Image (tube, rainbow over all chains, first blue to last red; front, side, top):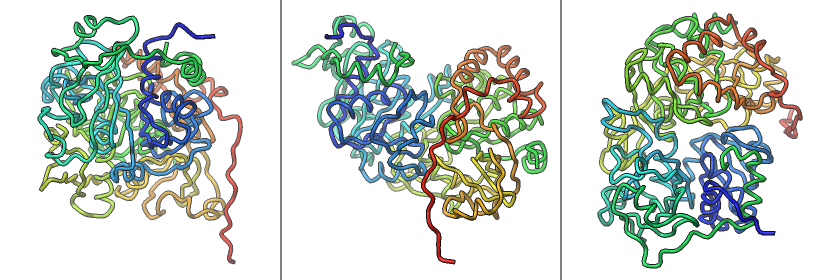
Length: 256
Length: 292
């Protein structure tokens, strides 16, 4: 029987899971991406592997709920338990196909701010910081960020670039600045999916989630957003995706 | 040695201290709380991420400088004391040297190898280069200056009295932290004989020559997890996040869980520990070190 009701977070997890290709080495991160990795591994990407920056590699998702990547179930049956610098070594060599980064603010060129809102010397808000975000943004082959779609989060230009996307948006910005990885592939929000041109630059609206209008997306976006010529509706989560999400997050801690 | 003695002897005011080197697990909260009880001042805290411990030390007024990639509450979000300190100077102004996880590791490896900096490509294009004077762009690379801590405080599963620690699970940057630091304080779930530690020398985390204190402190990492011993106490982090939202709420929390508590044993007596204990052992297969 088809499951017809799902939350925005469940849809985001499903969209994020579809970004993982079979065989990928994925720098997983925290929260929704942990679920996305588990979903992908058990649907379309059975040979994907996950890398966790504190020093873990694993294939199957953990047997019980994870509030953080360091919870003991994530270590049981790991493929590798090691030091953080070894996971960074793989990423520095271009071995990480896809990374996930959480963000407080993203701008039209895919730059993320998780450090300061306002002048860093007198910030209005001090955010926690990069964590591994800047490393993923610079060194993974491509990356995806997930966030709540609010005007204060999707801004024209971030005031502080913690994790660089396509910089000032000019052609070849990443290459000119020596950044190894390819940059952001998608911004998955609670309302839509934004993507970027193949050689970087400005984010455009690629698909709108079911039940959300294009106008609603624009009203909550801090720049004048361009749409893809083939603008689509984001496919709803499949039954298989939803049942895996609910198995991995049984109490809906991250997805309800 | 007790944690009280170890902090008194080896962590004076103004020290630079690595804690939380393994990221989410094995965070030496008992040692951090002792720093607060002894009213340490002007500390520099060094770490990758800090799951609430740095926030607590900042809120208690112990800290002058943060050298870290992330300060907050991993499962709950922002660090409210950290915000108050940086945004409003409450309870005091602190200096922040922003890093990424990779760059903190490199800064410690540089100190461990006794070189002034290590070159890397990470942080190219990040504004962290703009705010942290110890990380600079040179000839298309990033030079991360060495960070040499006075002391690394590490919680481990077991250690012997001579300072040989066995730790397992993800190790974060514990090795470079211990090698870079002038001295290491261990807090351990179990104090064991050297017949245990020396039976598996590959598992010994650091050279015993670095270790100045071994403290038997079961539960010393609560609420963070310890593989094979303790689960993460998610509810405790949630409660801390809620109560630390206001300055008053934080101060009440601090009195209740740190200032009015003489030591870790008394702290643990206030908790329902059974649901947090790991129930099922999962032993690894021993390795064979023969010959002789």
